[in-house]
Image (cartoon, rainbow, N blue to C red; front, side):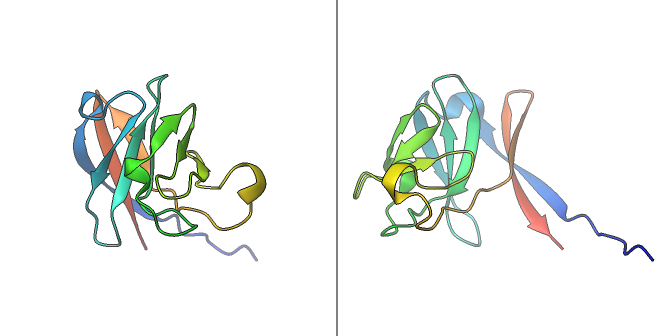
Length: 115
């Protein structure tokens, strides 16, 4: 007997234009479960993480974006934008939760997973 797997529902919210986020920069978006940092890389890709470093809770939205990672402004931990995982020697020491994000017609849509 096969069990039915219920797919989570994602509600998408427009949080601004891609151009509202500077290249190699971030924008903080208030959210009910905690602020989300929306990042734009130098190659124009968009990522979203909880705006809290897994090390000491530093605001990742204030960090420096390099490649597809961000350096936490408090203690310089490098966090991979696609996974929220620390890089290098800090790998495996926690992670910043990834938020669902997509771009449609130049607009950034942030997802909230329900059910």
